[in-house]
Every structure is written in C-alpha cells, then in structure tokens.
Length: 235
Image (cartoon, rainbow, N blue to C red; front, side, top):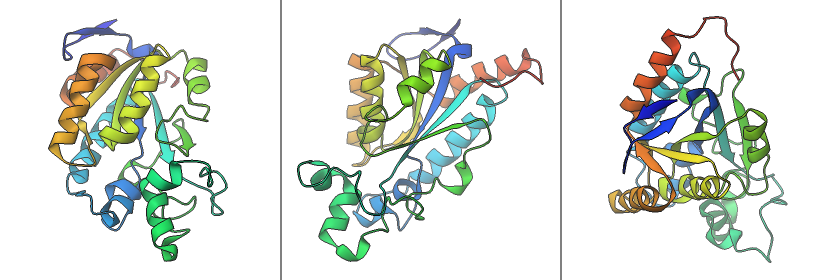
C-alpha cells in the first residue's frame, strides 16, 4: 500500500490492484470539429488534458498498472441509443445534435467514424482494455465491472472528458460498487468551464472519493516501475 497525498485527506492505495480509466478521450470530446465543439463547448483545454494523460499512461504501463479505455459510441442504425422511450436521444449531446440536424446522422459518435475514434496521441496499446459504452456511465450496460473484478482491481484513477458528465457519472457508479475512486484533477476537463469542473471536484472530494494531481500519481508509478522486473507481465 502506498500513501497518496490526496484531497480531502491522504488515502492508502495498492497500485498492484489499481487501474487508470481513460474516459471518452475521443475526437468527439477532445478535438476541434468533434461533437462538443459543434455543440459550442470550449475544447481549448483538451490539448493539456491529452498531454497529461499521455504522460500518466507512459508511466502506468511499465509499472504494471492496468489501463482501461471507455469509448462512447453508437451503432450506425442507432439501435443501441435508446429509442423513443429513452431520454438519451433528448439529452446526450451527439444524439441531440443528430436529431436536430439529420445531415449529421452517422457522423457523431458512430462506431467507425472519426468522431468516435480515440485521439491519435492516446491510442490504446496492446494489453489495454477497451470498452464501448452507450450511456454516460461506463458501468451502464457494459462489462466494465466484470473486467475490473477479474483483474482484482479495487482502486480507480479517473482521467478524461467530460469531468462533470461521463467521468463523474462513472466515478459515482464506481463508488456505489465499492471501488475506491480517485479523480486526477489536472487530467480532466469539464463541459461547461471552470465552474462546472469546480462542482465536480467538490462532489468527488465531499461525497464520492478523492482528487489527486498527476504529478503525485507519476511519482508513485515511477517508484513502482523502478522496483518491478522489466519482464513482469502486465495485469
């Protein structure tokens, strides 16, 4: 167990039973011309988030810490989007845009599209887990819980976009399922600006988990790598 100087108080974490979750780092949410940008959301902070996550993943993999990607996306016929009885088409940003502008159908968060793809800088590597989801929470209707439990994972470090939507939704569900959630505060960005991010940080620190800075996480990952055999298998 390692003591991490998190907020609102330090927390003991077992990196051997930890995973970094990369939530929705797709062109849709991190690139100009993607879903969030088309919806009028400022994505200028995404470049910083991409770089921060990239550095964290480069340290996590040799440390033997699992890397799990969550990727939001729908089938081309939208058969898994919820249909008329679901609120999802009315509230989820890509679905809302495609309903309002039929010319966008099949272009936003559609499996196989540019919008759906993970940004090039963070492309999944062999050994990483990739889970496609159709709702904000990565636990809703997916195998995420089973994948984590099969690997003995108990501690989750959250990164990705958007902090106040898919990241926070997945983090809350993780807490309900008795995982230990830690949000890497400088490896995320909110849809809605600084006040939206501040609200998520408050929610996490007050009710659902802890927040850490990427530099704190990196120090622990690098220390673990230094004492781990180079040929040790990844979890």
